[in-house]
Every structure is written in C-alpha cells, then in structure tokens.
Amino acid sequence: MELGKTLGDSFEYAKEGLVGKWARWILLIISCIVFPLIMGYVMRIYRGVVPSPELDEWGGMFIDGIKLFIVAIIYAIPIIIVEFAVIGSAGVAFLTTMSNPMADPNAVMALVGSVLFGVIILILVAIIIELIAIIGMVRFARTNSFGQAFNFGAIFDTIGRIGIASYILALIVLAIIVGIIEVICLVIPYIGLLILFILLPFIVLFSARYVTLVYESAGVEVSTPS
Image (tube, rainbow, N blue to C red; front, top):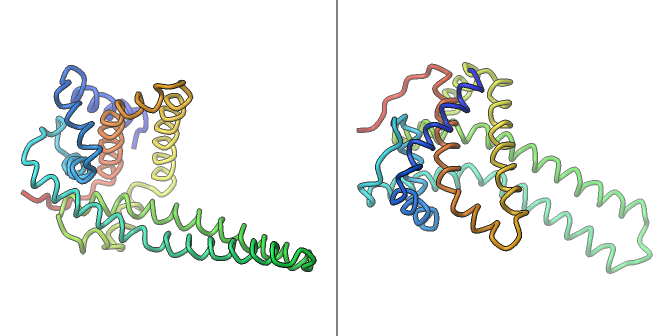
C-alpha cells in the first residue's frame, strides 16, 4: 500500500465529488444532520463506487445508514462496558476521598492507580475495536451481511494481508490529517465551528474513500450487493 497514492486518490475523489457540485455538497451537509443518510452514503463509498456516488434512492440510503449504525453500536458495546467500569472506579475513588478526608493515603493512591489503569485499558480496547470495526464495516457494506461484519477470521485475514504495521500507520495518518483540519477550524474565532460543519462532506468523502482503498489494498474479493 502506497500511502502517498492513497492520500492523493482520496483527495481527488472528494474534490471531484464536491467541488463545483454545490447542490450535492449542500445535500450532504443536510445528510450529516440526519446522520443515517450520511452513513448510508458512506456505505456506497465503501462498496468501491467510482466516481463518488449520486445522492438518490434516499429511502434505501437511510436504511443502509441505520444498518451501518447498528453494526457500529454492536462494536462499541465492549468500549461502553469498560467505560462504565472505569467511571464506576473513579466514582468510588472520589466518594472514598470526599467521605473520609483522613483515609489512608496509600489506599487512596491505590484507587487512583486503579482508575488510571482502567483508563489505559479503555484506550487500548477502543483502539483494538476500532481496528477491527473499520474492516468489519467495509465488509458489511460489500456483502450486506451482518454475519460478515463480525466474521473475525476474515477480518483478521484482511488486516494480515494489508500488514498490521501498514494498517495502523494508515489509520494514524488519517487521524492526524482529520485532526489537524478540525483543530485549525476550531481555533478560528466565532466561525470556526461553522467552517468545520461546512467541510464535513469533504472530510467524509475523503475518509471513506481512504478507508476503502486501505481495505482494497489487501486484495480481498467479497461480493457486492446489487
């Protein structure tokens, strides 16, 4: 996988799909508000449609978005469980300290340490789930099968074909690029948030195409729904 080529292709994909096509851009901004629509549109990109797909069959796109959202929620369940456990530990540590100012400092430090350990575990779980979920969601888009979205054997095989180091590096690069755009927008006084909202369709197309190309670099063939 050539990161430079992947980045260039993704940028041109988003540029071709939006620049000069302002009606589509506006409709995608609206779709970001009605989030199942934008998720359904992302499903079409995940299926490898080139150039960027048209905005049509809104009902089908909405249903596809709901399905992809369900997949995302299921993947998020382990993260939510660990998060609640960490919050519970933090709550215990806080209440213990507040209710007994004379509590053993060693015991308090042990509680704080357990909370910090929980946070580290939460971050690790979130990263691992994200690595798996991205491939799972692309597989779901291409097969329209919930079973394939959670076919962990096939998912791990795909990650192996991409190369775990290459895959992680690719996602880090994507996160950095999107993060920089978000930070630049948010530091602009008064209108930064509005600018970021306007740029969302471009970010979505760029990111979805980028993930699609990363997936396709594995050379895995799965059937695409008609």
